[in-house]
Length: 570
Image (tube, rainbow, N blue to C red):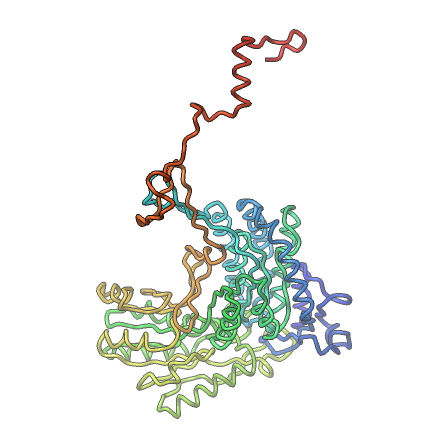
C-alpha cells in the first residue's frame, strides 16, 4: 500500500470530504495534475513515516478567515444561551464518535506525525477522556457565595461564556491538545476556530467531520460553533489580531508564543500559552533504578523526543552515575526503532529533514563544548507497511545521550529531538538549582525513596515547574490535572482541574435586600446622612399587588366559589 492511499482510506472512513470540488485531494489522484497541485495557495502534505506526499490541501484565504469569524460571532449568542448540560450533550455525542473511530483516527495521527501506533491511539483516548471530563463539568460550572461586610447584602461570583476562542495547535499532539481546549470551551459556551499545524491538517479535518456528525445528532447546535482554518503563521497572526477573538489558545515554540502574545496584548485580549519545555529529572542515590530506567527512556525517546514534556536533562547523583549510565546506554542502543505501525517498535521517525538538521547541529555543538555524545545518528530501518522506501526520506535516528560537564547555554535551550543531556550532582541543593536554571518551566521529576527529598522537590523551594512528579516520568500527563508551566512555557493552563475558568468571564455581584444603603469600608457620603439614609418603607402591611388585594376583598363579599354544574370543575 502507498501512504497516500492509506491517507485517502482513513480520511474517507472518518468522513473527510476529498476529491474534485473539495479543498482536499488525496491518494493516487494527488500525483496527477489537478487544480490544487497547480495552486500556489495549496499545501503539499507529507508523512514522516517515509517522507512521501499524501496530497494537497487548500489554504484558507484571509477573506475566508474573516467570514469564519463572522459565523462564529453569530453562533455565540445562541450557544451562550444554551443551558450548559445541553452543551455537554454535544460533547457526549462527540465522545461516542471518537470511541467508534478511535482506531482509524489513531492510525491517521500516526501517519501525519510518525509517532508509534500505541501513542496515536493513546492520543485519541486522551480526547475521549477530556470529553468525559467536560460532560461532567457542564453540570459543575460552579460559582460561589461570598460573605458581605454589609448587613442584609449578598455577594456572589458567577461564570459566563467568554466568546469566540481561537485554538492554534502544534504538530506533535495534533488532536489531543485541540480537544483539551475544544471540549472545555464548548461546554463553557464558546464557539471555536481551529488553526492546526500546517504539518498535520488531515487529523484536524477528521476531528471536525466527527464533531459535525455529533452536532447533527444533537439537533440544537448552531452553525459556526466549530470551524477549521488552514494556513501558516499569517493565518495565526490574523486570528491573534482580530478583536472578535476573545481568547487565543496557542501551543508551539517560545518564538511563536511571544509573537502571538504581543499581538493579542496590543488589543488587550486574552491569551493561553503552552510553549517550550526543557524538562529535567533528578535521580537521587536512593532511587530504584529498575523504575527509573524505563521512565527515563520513555521520557527521552517517546514521540521521538518531540513532546513538550520530553525529558531533556538528567541530573544524576555522582554515587550512582556510572551504574545508571551503563544501563541507559545499553537500553538506548537496543531500542526498537522503525515503522511506527509495527507493534514491536517503540520509536518512530523525526518529523522531517529540518528536525534532523536541528538535532545534528545541537549534537555537533555539544561536542565542541566538551560533551561526550552517544548515539544520535541516522539509521536504516527495516521495510514497513508501505511500498515506498522508509530509509530514503524518513528521518529515523537513534536517541542521543550526551554526557556534559556543566549545564551550558546549549543544554539550557530546547532542541525538539531525542537528545538527553546527562550531568552529575553532589548535593541535593545543587540538583534543585540546576533543575530550575533554565528559561522554561513546564515539567520535572525526581526519582527518590527519601521522603524529605521528595517533599522538598514539591515545595515552594523545589521545582519551579507547572508539573512536578515523584518516581514517574515528566511526560504522559493525565487530563484530570491542569496542564501547563511557568516562565518561557507561557503560564497557561489547559485540560482538567479549574482550567475551565480561562474560557469564561467572571462576574461578581452584590444584592442589597434591606431598606438601607450602607457603604463598604464605612465610607461616609453626605447624601447618605442618618436622616436620609433610611429608605421609607411601603405603608401597606402586605407585599401583595393591588390586583390581588381587590380579588381578596371581592372574595370576602361574595363568599366561596361554587362548582359549575355543567363541567363539574373546581
